[in-house]
Amino acid sequence: MHVLITSDTVGGVWTYTQELVTGLVQAGHRVTLVSFGKIPQPHQTAWMQTLDGLDYRPTEYRLEWMEVAERDIEESRRYLELLVEEVRPDVLHLSQYCYGDIAADVPRIVVAHSDVVSWWVAVHGKEPDDTPWIRRYRNHVTRGLRAADVVVAPSQWMLEAVRRHYVGPARGKVIHNGRTPELFERRKKDDLVLSVGRIWDQAKHVSLLLSAETSARVCIVGWEQEPGRESKETLSIARPNVELLGQKSQDELQALFADAAIYAATSRYEPFGLAPLEAALSGCALVMSDNPVFHELWGDAAVYFRKDDASDLARAIADLRSKPHMRDDHAERCYKRACEQFTASRMVEQYEAVYEEVCSRARVA
Image (cartoon, rainbow, N blue to C red; front, side):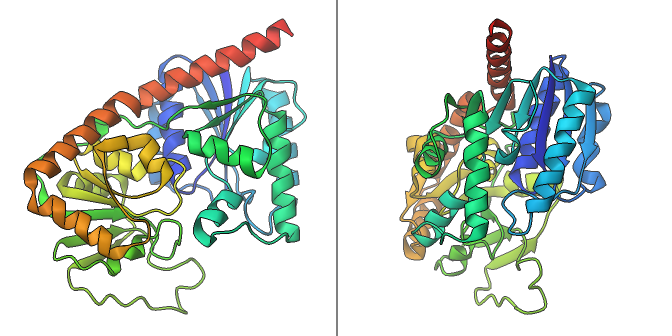
């Protein structure tokens, strides 16, 4: 089967794409991959070198959620339509809503990785104001969802979010994101609490660790300041036990996961969460914000703290540090759940089934 996949090079969607494309090509499928946003760095595309069935087309078109993106959206839609005519894929796998209704006689799935409105509600407690940008964005999302043969989301919560804020898709399906367990190492742990996320991002809310009164060594991986504001703000850290490590490569991050005994997932908004999954596959106990997605995915394997409550976060960390047997038990349960529910191979198999379904329905029609 020949699948045309769209992606972007920012954050977890690119990691998801790497796992999916690698699995599909290794299973014998042809893949045409189109990326939007920034052209990736060489280290971001090193995984492609051994994939003979991959045709990669990087672009710099702006992403659909950006406020000044309308011209880029129109141009990139036309680019995709011409590309479909050129390569003639069997199915479209679209990681952006705005391409769901492009003019192409090809079955399509749209993946709801996240969206602006549900993000806004989680962070601000209300829907965004009805600005021209938001109206345009809602229109793109709604049209893309309506045109999709199947809408896939990484959690039931995310699938319900697009139904609630936009429109109910004709057919929706949950396919969990997945990672390859063999990429991660479980070994003897240090007394270390790790978290991954942009310090300035209110959704990730890793800044909560700066307020949590814990004596544990805490490491935070991710950008400290919002792009474009680096020269305007200086972040001061009052706690000597907290280290801001900035950006790390995949190898460096995997080593940190292997060292850390506890992973703190502080997000207010997280449609899935790849970093907690990577931590679980590395043998970390998960301390998680009390949000519905984390409960849906991790159940009683994780330890939860009250959302936005630094004191309760500190309490949860202290409990696990003072009770090593409980910490090890939670770490083992998280690892088993990750291996049973959230592997890349399982994700690829479920996408293959969806591709076959929409192509079969198209042939019958």
